[in-house]
Picture 1 (cartoon, rainbow, N blue to C red):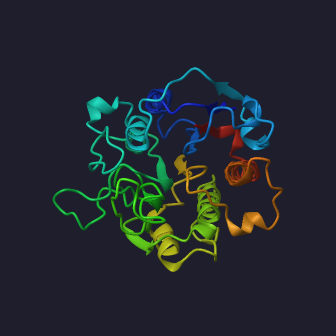
Picture 2 (cartoon, rainbow, N blue to C red):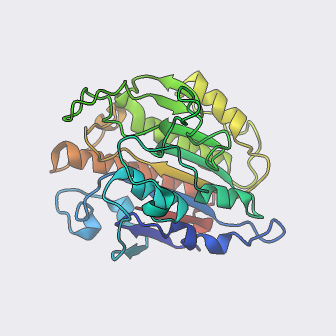
Picture 3 (cartoon, rainbow, N blue to C red):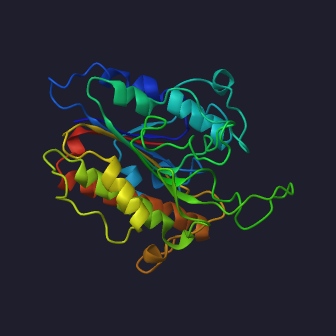
Length: 310
């Protein structure tokens, strides 16, 4: 049984936590899966387990071990995510801006796991925010993860924060184009549709967990019919489900970063929190995590999956 962690500050220690997984060979028992879940701008006291009486988060609370004394490498998105992915301080990576990050060049934890003897299958769903255009080819999204870039076989998500370009100019007067949604290097839609974005993140993640479960064969788990043709095609062509390899999935929520939104499907059946749109954004995230835990359990992978929530 692998521990399931809840850590309340993004840190640069993740690659070191996963170092014991790297020596595992294919000849040994199957290495553990890793599910890394990152919330965006979640307050310390906004979980039931940390004292909130207005937001209920039973699924996040159910993660068994909680660390409370770690520190973020930076107070903004890009440098903290760079440290999370590489294990290096932002000053060493040269990534310390949150507005127009350079193309990320450090080796990511996904690449380390992919290059390990266990040859992990890797995927990222959600917010990247570590650069998307290189200086040499500014019109090509060749800095995004997916298609083996940045160590990830597959990527479905936004290249940066969802408020950049939505709803308009920033307070500083900077005007961004509408935020696109990508599947690997292909634009699925621009601007992204917020009404079901979080639901699509959940659907893709659940599909990957099922499709990559031990013994699963290609085509045995159908791609969700709710997905657009581009995403469905990229999923089918990027993920090898025949190898029976361990997997690393990074799910980077937009929740509960502003501007706040809740998926239409979630609104139909949920009980509103006592914290308005912010609390509802957190409870939707918690509900999705609960669904992912159920999928891990139903596919007999829960006991062999290291779950980390930040």
